[in-house]
Image (cartoon, rainbow, N blue to C red):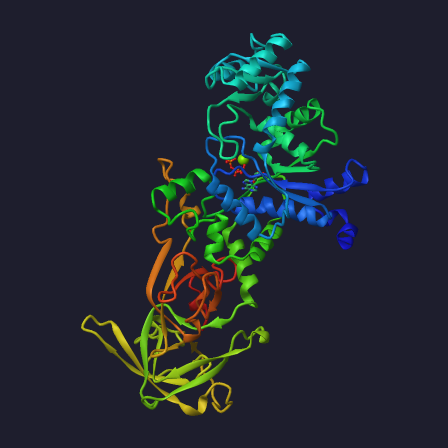
Length: 568
Ligand code: ATP
Ligand code: MG
């Protein structure tokens, strides 16, 4: 923390600079932030940004961070979402300790604030319909018109509001409005509705209330009750700030919290809008809210993203005051960087074809010692069985290779990773001309690590011994929408990528991968990082999700997306 405090202004983002100023000027003597989700859906990568930003600020300034459910609108809120949000926030490592709050627990205080405003002559009960209120409100060019109910006496307002609370009116029949200024250039200040009648059962308070506060009234009160110092929200609330300040002030809160806005995070090639995700889930286009092609936090976790990778991503993106869209490839970069040194590099064959080493003694097997990660010795080594029959990737053999193809073709010698040099002698084909078996001979003198080869080969391929291999399922993903082709069709529906999911049912992995647990992740050499699926993987049917391929189609490999082609 000390170190951070000494940093110069230019290394601080604009929110930190504002906080520094507030602390220097004595506006606050501590920092308290919060994340205020509405439990109406699953959290996504954009929320992760907000969570890590708020939590990060509390940490940086030695302050506190609250998790508060903004559950003031019972129509869309569900207990299921409350649970998933708590899980996600914890998983991200944003520690709210015992400070888990529900705005609905403040309904009584909010109600008292409303009564206080009425008593001060700052709120009135209005009988206009929702549509009339909209008409009266005016627009950017036209000032609003005052409601004919605006000058009701305090006594009448108190009585009517009490009757609203008692359930004497139908939904929409009467509302409570703040009395501010119908001519304000800021439309939010034109006597906004602050309470409405809604006969709905609430997930937390049940049927206790039939009036519910509006967001713009409830939110500042929630912040003030919790003594939040910096209420950080996204840009669309900038125009609501005068109302936020008005509510806190008129309701008499001391040490009012301060709202600061930042730009939302948008990502290319993915779907973040709750509305679209909901539709994909309902139409069964995806396998629930945690489908690994989505960017809900649950989906990213299932896919194999780590909290560290998301933290790194959020840091790289930074905090801005202007909306912009971040390339999905940046997220991929962050997970690769995070896993690179942490995970063992194993061998698995996704598109298998048999390789038979004809001069390797039948029935013989040997165990080769292979380092788990050449860049990180601490991960140790493991034994990998080798034998006469192996599986290799189909595309590592070509009967008639193009130029610069350095893998197996008749007459060519390659290294089997961590094992021997083999020279291809030919192949067998079925009646359709598909290669069924590749043949080769090996040179016993070339055992990896023996130093006896005395010659070099240009290609190295990976392999798995056939008789000890574990059959696994691998799921490969592409972006669910392709930004360049347009995210939406003309009719407004999503322009889905038909290849967003490829299921490979017959992959072969080395036996060390036999007893993995859901959530474990590995590098599969030359193929990418994979994570054991937490929903569908079983001990007798392992399912691996590809988190990300090894090389980026973006920046690192300009020619194409197939990492393997760049390998040799
Ligand atoms: P909606 O209000 O439409 O239901 P929401 O995404 O705003 O959806 P909230 O639960 O209100 O959902 O959001 C909680 C917090 O997360 C808010 O403070 C909001 O500003 C922030 N947030 C939401 N989306 C993003 C985003 N894309 N980037 C950064 N912060 C976001
Ligand atoms: Mg919102």
